[in-house]
Length: 471
Ligand code: SAM
Ligand code: SF4
Image 1 (cartoon, rainbow, N blue to C red):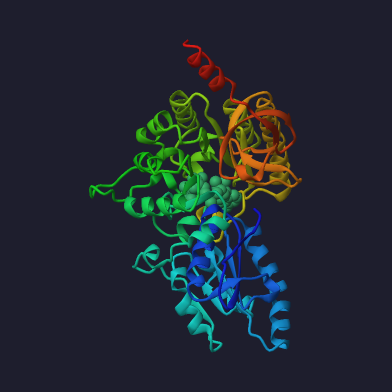
Image 2: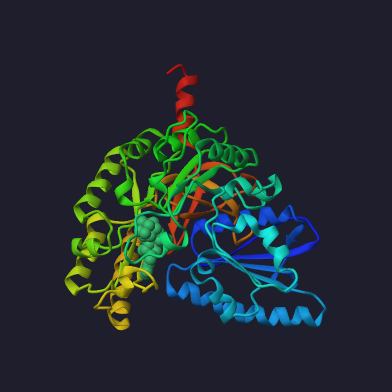
């Protein structure tokens, strides 16, 4: 997945944060940036920075290797800074930091500070410790709540990040799928209290955010304390978030199929602000593999959940994650995955080659599959998924969607927004519409985006004409 840059706006020291991997990391990068803004750090490109933080992902081997090659490039920047008489401090944060700890400093001695995802609220004091050249490694799971120590984003920082935002509501995972490092790098499941989440959503809305995605490694296992002192479900939390003035759209990710409870399904029925698009990772279509992965549900149970959500909200579309080439996966078991794609008709999906992660049970399993088998299966799966995605997009032609406009487009006079299904939609219209939701009729489909024109909202106009005519 692509890296992204987090920014701050004012101060004397210069900071560059590069984020890898999931939305949780994007959120954490913003929190680190907000925290360090209070310490006087301002945005900078890597070449000018006094502090570079790589906020890393450890989910697959490639993700970790990318960090080491980036550190190779940063080595040159550190040397150049030293020649200019400046000190460039290098910090590695995130899940690679948690998983590899001191090994990072051994393998890449330019790194001054290693900080895990549960300790980054301590960055100011850790940077002070590292200031005299001491190598600092902070990968414990502190007892205090990190969120209590983080700085809220300023209105200017929120506005700079656009009209959509992530809010972490839950962290960690207790599911222990046999392929996954998350329970080891992010720790046990913890949910933030409802009041604090709502306050954060209100602050975002006040600064102009229109769409909030509630995020967590296992977001629908949410069970934070409500104002009534009892644990609330994600469904109830969404209901409360939908009441925040200014918030027009809600999403949540990433969910586990086993935690799609009644209140969440009801939220899809009852909350117009909850977008009709759900990312629900399944990983495999084979019951034997689902069991070997410790996914705790069968193919039939997954399909039943999809049906229940569709019954609650008939215009629902789904995306998912697949792993191909899990240890021992046979050709027939792989075909069961292909047939699940056909059966559900996903609007989009991510698919990955199984990557053995040190310390996870699947990495120790016999029958690890050869790379060629994994690659060949991945290609077949991706071809099938691409076909389904193209068909889903083609089905949008001529339809009218509500689009939330996010930013100016690539071409002059163009703006870009998202449909309820997260499809990018390009429209020729004034950039003053950024932050607004408008009806758009889709007139053209390109491989990865839709083109459309603002709709004159005919139904509402004709309603008014009828009313004015006394109809
Ligand atoms: N919590 C989510 C769930 O229940 O599936 C998944 C979160 S994980 C950060 C995102 C995706 O990475 C997973 O859905 C899985 O497809 C993929 N993934 C995780 N571990 C992997 C591994 N060892 N090899 C390949 N892909 C992996
Ligand atoms: Fe990893 Fe998701 Fe399984 Fe948790 S539920 S162990 S985060 S794949």
